[in-house]
Length: 68
Image (cartoon, rainbow, N blue to C red; front, side, top):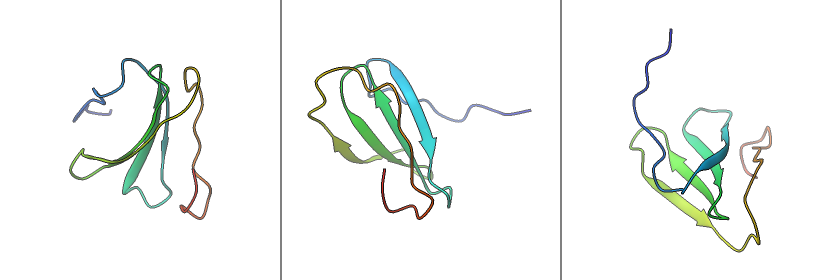
């Protein structure tokens, strides 16, 4: 069983989530047209990528953990 420890409350609605291979970061995409990279330990946003013209419906992290 999993236990919810925190939520991603910066997006209007979160539409996509992926976890980095080492588990230290999460990437999320939302209806606000941004992609955010989060630190899993602190829950803080490390980077925000903007400029998408519409919702971000899918995100992925490459196996090397260096590209999203």
